[in-house]
Amino acid sequence: MKQFISVKDVKDINALVKQALHYKANPFADKALGTNKRIGLLFLNPSLRTRLSTQVAAQNLGMEPIVFNVDKEGWALEFTEAAIMNGTTVEHIKDAAPILGNYFDILCIRTFPGLQNRADDYGEKIINQFIKYAGIPVVSLESATLHPLQSLTDMITIKESMDANENLKNKQPKIVLTWAPHIKPIPQCVANSFSQWVNAWGAANFIITHPEGYELDSQYTNGATITHNQEEALKDADFVYVKNWSSYSDYGKVLCTDASWMLTNAKLATTNKAKVMHCLPVRRNVELSDEILDGENSLVTKEASNRVWAAQTVLSEILKNA
Ligand code: CP
Image 1 (cartoon, rainbow, N blue to C red):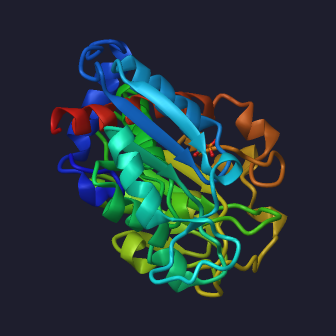
Image 2 (tube, helix red, strand yellow; image 1 turned 30 degrees about the vertical axis):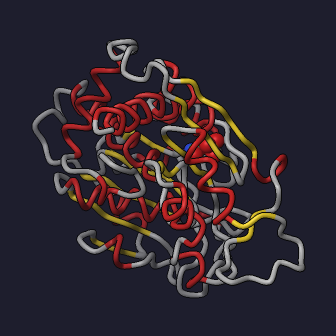
């Protein structure tokens, strides 16, 4: 693996999941792989899970992680070609990224979309310029449109849960991605990425449900069944992935705040005792109810814990191909 930006960088999802579960059972199996290697973790946005799990993963492989909060501690970066830098930006990515490429063996970047201009966000200008100018493997810690480490984690969590359940072991699972309410405009990254990975995996009956106006970019959802009827979607579901996202068509807007879209135990009653997933952070009793999050169907803590094994697997694949 040369980089990890989307599922397109993955040859075999099942093999990656298998490797991740191997690391979960044997965290230090490849402790020597990253000896004398340094990994830079650049954050242009806040993070709890991505930041800490990637550091733990790097250390499990013997690498030295260095975290840099670019948004708070770095010079304001300029990403526009031929910019006349007489405004607020201080350093061009063309100057900064090659230096980072000399300091590190792998560079990881976390950035969010502005949610103002769809073409800018979906053009992935920021992460693409790090790739262009750093000259070393780049790993997305979430970009403007995708969150591949989260999605690999989600596949690991689904596979682990299926293996532990006799009724799901040899079944094609029904996986439902349901929109949930939120008070703020939230990126489409997690929903795009989850859709892209489940479709690429190809081993599930995949349904996406959301209110009108929340259709995601079809390049990620093609292959899924899409419905505005949440009740219908949830029937017989084995896994329910809960996530808010802002509108893609009316870009970055909150079009619906209907609280009845929040998942409750009553809604779960028609599912196949579905396990409930969320990437976290979650706004309790807005996006997802206490009764679900604190209940026996919730996979959210296990899911967040599995972030380590997803990151460790991706870093090991890059180190093995260096
Ligand atoms: N799920 C996730 O990416 O969490 P953080 O924003 O805390 O990293």
